[in-house]
Length: 85
Length: 265
Image 1 (tube, chains in turn blue, red):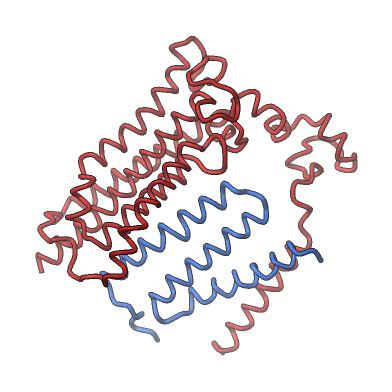
Image 2 (cartoon, each protein chain N blue to C red; image 1 turned 90 degrees about the vertical axis):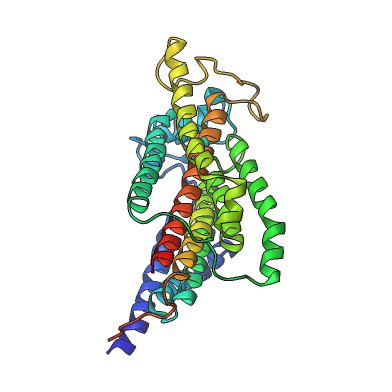
């Protein structure tokens, strides 16, 4: 087990955790932030798979732009999810 | 039931992902089917690199001498496969037109100031200091698209994100003073035009659409210097203008539409 594989597995576990958390969190603002953490994990995964271009795109669009647009949209709606159950 | 469902999902997904990663073939192995082409996968790696005739092998061998670009991925998407990239840029252009036609059809009078809250002094200060660096980094990525990782799309998104941060913190009125909406639309169209014009330059010089090195489009310097690789540099600049213009313009339209609705209520 070399270091890259171990770190890759840790990143993948964190990826699943953040993906599930982004879906199941009640607070939408926290969900957006966790989603950007998910994008960052995805970016690291691409870096480990040696595709720097895709990693850069993911970091710029996934972690940067999407988060900004979501936060801007959240500022116009309510922060909590409504009508649960 | 639901309390049990989430951990079960989690464990199952983790297990599946780790299993897939452990079974992946090593990164960059020339015996991968997408790399070795029709050759027998049991042949040794060195022989595949010498004999193989797949597209990936051709690109890896010849991209630097064909395009004068150090970045093989940029050479692929902006020279060998530039036609695909042209239509990606067209998609973005069309998306901006569609979003604008939907958002500006109704109430978009934009009478509000674009801002009904005052951020803390820390946020304003940090934004004021960070935005120039973000914009500079975006330009760096656009202009070095043929030398290192990156290119027009990524750099354009970074520039757009920088301006969007500024717009969120200081309001669309103050941001609109630096980049008016008319300039954004012109930037977007001009970026597309640069792309198509440098493609047509290939036809004018007697070759095909988007021909690069054979047509001798300037600047065709040594591979590895900034002024090299002909159309790649210009196409990167064009895509950067197109993407950043589209993103900032769409965000302005969102902001304006919301302000108009608020002032109508």
